[in-house]
Image (cartoon, rainbow, N blue to C red; front, top):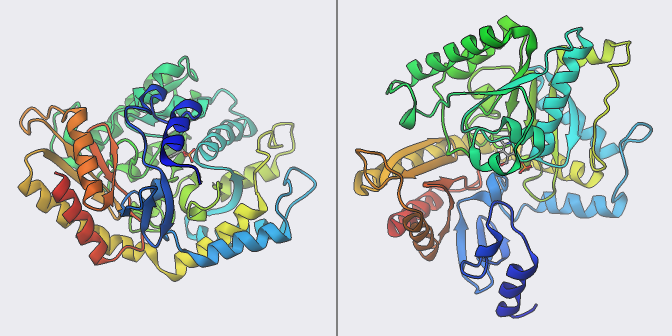
Amino acid sequence: MRETNFLVENNARHLWHPMAHPAEMRANPPKIVNAAAGVEITDLQGKTVLDAVGGLWNVNLGYSCEPVKAAIRDQLDQLPYYSTFRGTTNSPLIELSYELAEWFREDGLTRAFFTSGGSDSVETCLRLARQYHKINGQPERTKFIALKKGYHGTHFGGASVNGNANFRRNYEPLLPGVTHLASPYLYRNPFGTEDPAVLASLIARQFEDEIAFQGADTIAALIMEPVLGAGGVIVPHETFMPLMRDICDRHGILLIADEVITAFGRTGAWTGSRLWGVKPDFMSTAKAITNGYFPFGAVMIADRIAEAFEANKNSYGAIGHGYTYSGHPVGAAAALATLKETRRADVATNAAARGAELMAGLEGLKAKHEIIGDVRGKGLMCALELVADRKTKASAAKDVVATIYEGTYEAGVMVRTSGANIILSPPLVITTKDVERIVAALDAGL
Ligand code: PLP
């Protein structure tokens, strides 16, 4: 391998990173991650730290999941690629579809459409939602409603429903006909309430008002994350998603659950929708479906929607959508092995138990460190929000957040920062000792 200076210099010269300013790379070079095992990563300097980011919310089973690695190697030998456009399919993909139908049967989602990642999955949901209404004789239902602080990837459709200006402003104009409701973000909400159930009902009323204003017959779907991830781990009240589902039902609006982070156990339930007792019409998944080892995603489709497509006899029925890598056989083999391991290790149960320990540890840090304004989490998706002043809730300065990030890394744990939030999404297989290590390193960093 080349020496460090060569790598840092050429990273700055030839490589643009997602979600980063290209001019910052020399002054603030990223850590070069060189190896990983168990729940730890090792950088080029040989420093090994616990990865409390879990890759990017996706390496749920850690870095040493041999059955998934073996499945990828074996599938590369057997059939490294073939298309699934009309005319051809492959056996690991059929087996995966069968397994996913079993996995999601109790949610009424037994048809899958495959993608290469989360943004593709979201785009697929948005497009199929519009198509469903055309099939159903309501072609004027084209608009989408979303939540402020929601994150739905970076394709033009996904960016249009994104609820954070950072992901929108430089790329506008985006899709017309998208409206954003208030976020269920209790710590900073526009209504001044401190009661999460009241906040849920106020946003539900906003949704009803918006439907009355725009006309239900113009709205295709509501898209929402069951627990908002990239927006800062925003956990709504348990009544929120059921309320939104009920309003959708009363107005013929489809519900797209964006579960790119929450599917497969992260919240302590197998899906975020199941956590809140809701059955969505479309569910976008990706990330942990292959434990992060292969870019892959699946959109799960509700039976009643799928049956309308399957029964359709007019020109609207065919799916004019898909990707070269939809149903990649290596991704399918990786997903099959991942699902098997995910079930065997019962990671949802561990996420709930370790998540409770982690939240207790974070509350302890809040009692000790004035800079922590808010602690949020569900299962193993948690956040600390840092403030300069608890009374005014003014956000902590960027350099302060950066110093805490570096200090925590020095103390042996990788975390992620997003604005003034420290985000934690470790592998779901972590132990109590790992939780203690995360809290101790954060304590040192803070
Ligand atoms: N939707 C949600 C809820 C996400 O968290 C993400 C990524 O973090 C995406 C969509 C986009 O996924 P990807 O980055 O794989 O395109």
